[in-house]
Image (cartoon, rainbow, N blue to C red; front, side):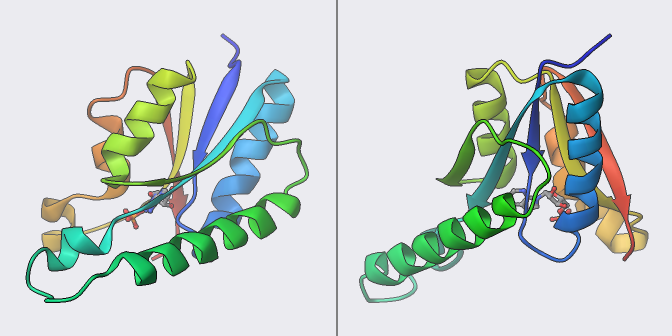
Length: 143
Ligand code: AMP
């Protein structure tokens, strides 16, 4: 079984580096395409109608900043990246949407060994696994 197109989900924290290293190693091994996705959860998700002001200018700045950081992250990878997605929405749903759209056959995410309440509440890796049409690799990262 070889993978043709790998989607690496990047939250742009420190842990993205070891997770990306695994995705790159797999891409090399399979001579696969590698695409990256970073999802921005819109401010309106968190604040809804609670904040009586227009959040669009702040949102735009956050989006631009994330795009720049993802470009920088991508440049440091030792692999040619096919597509770079900075999308807005619910993280798990957006990862699933892009995976379907691009016929991804492996999604790579980071995973913490969560315990107790955090485990009950779930994680992005859990959310991505449930509902994915393709394989999902959860790369263990230190807490
Ligand atoms: P978490 O469970 O939220 O700590 O995230 C674990 C992993 O999910 C990260 O290492 C990323 O692979 C992925 N992830 C979390 N948040 C995002 C995001 N906003 N965009 C893309 N991937 C994410």
